[in-house]
Length: 117
Image 1 (tube, rainbow, N blue to C red):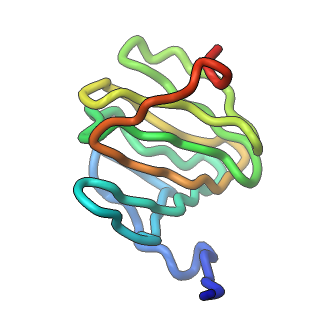
Image 2 (image 1 turned 60 degrees about the vertical axis):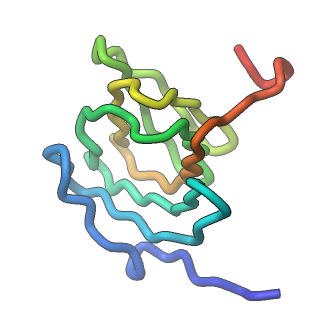
């Protein structure tokens, strides 16, 4: 077992896609194309619109944030909720009040029907 520190002070700022107030810390890579990060969004922070390089699960673990697709419509995600973004889908993420999330990126993410809305 390893205990890890995922505090915002250990994360690296995200500067791509006109992002602001956003940082991420890689937590690990899996076999093939699999990556896990903890993402921190400060109040008013945003990761700007860009196409997803992988299927990804963005799961909020603290606070409240939003995700938006290509149309720019924001969808609220709070602790215990998340969004699934398909590879190639243009999307953005942000938070008005600040949040932390676990982001899992995979070549292909298959979700059971029980978690889909």
